Length: 114
Image (cartoon, rainbow, N blue to C red; front, side, top):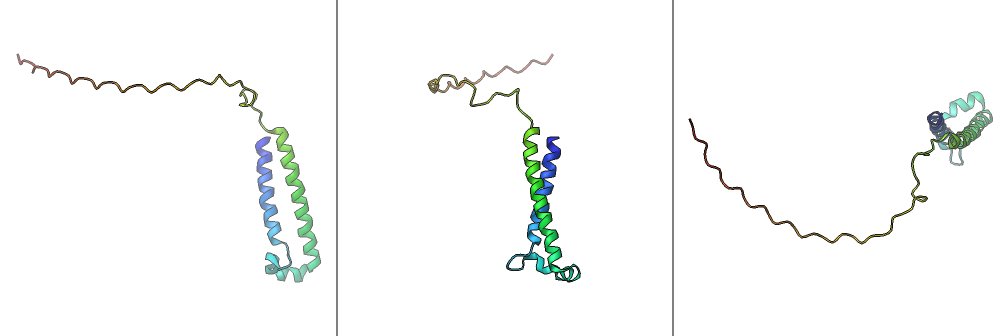
């Protein structure tokens, strides 16, 4: 269920972003590119539809976000860093002297052929 809510929230966020970009702002925004559709349906009518869709998607995004908190997987098996006791601080181990290099192996006598 958590995965479904996260996917729905992401889709809603993408659609909301696109709707906000389409809205007509003081400078015209991307809505100025849709002038022909404004002439067909009327400027005020398209603005109302886009604004209502924006508010609806914003409300859906809030609902999906809050609902995903309740279905989020909980880590009951794992321990929290805050609640676990930290062991007493110990001094770091002293560096050890490097080991002496091993002596080269003695050469072996060639095997006799029988």
